[in-house]
Amino acid sequence: MLASLMFAMTLAGADAPAETHDHTCQGPLQGEFRLLRSEDSVDLCELSANKVTLVVNTASQCGFTGQFEGLEALYQSYREQGFQVVGFPSDSFNQEYGNEEQTADVCYINYGVTFPMMATSKVRGGDANPVFADLIAQTGEAPRWNFYKYLVNRDGDVLGVYPSTTPPDDQRLRRDIERAL
Image (cartoon, rainbow, N blue to C red; front, side, top):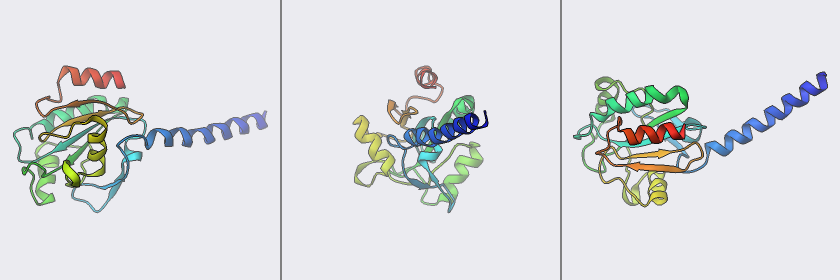
């Protein structure tokens, strides 16, 4: 009986990392990114492992900046079910501070954001960060403005692209998240 138990534990241990690895490094959510106002980096493969992820390009001085509140509410509503929001502040549309301290204050103090925010980066053109370069390649749709949203399933497939005008509480967006979960 002990041999059977050890064999089962060995199989369980051997299968788990391979399965997790397959899920974590599929699609656009790959690579190390520095967190906003931090020297620490996060591996997007680990962060999004087995999660449905909403990737959003953000800006602190935009008419859509108030969407941070809705994004945080969305994150809180579904995070226990395996949902993740990842924000990428960007000055690609000339509406982000040049100082990460100010950007962080808008996110963390003004809007109480608790989901991961990456350091400021480009999200369009030849200088787009690798996540957005891959999202654009997969969908054929680059962000046309701040607060563009890309929904990525647990396998790394992009399920939908939602423009800036789609608020986080949009019924279609919520339905798509719920289906993916």
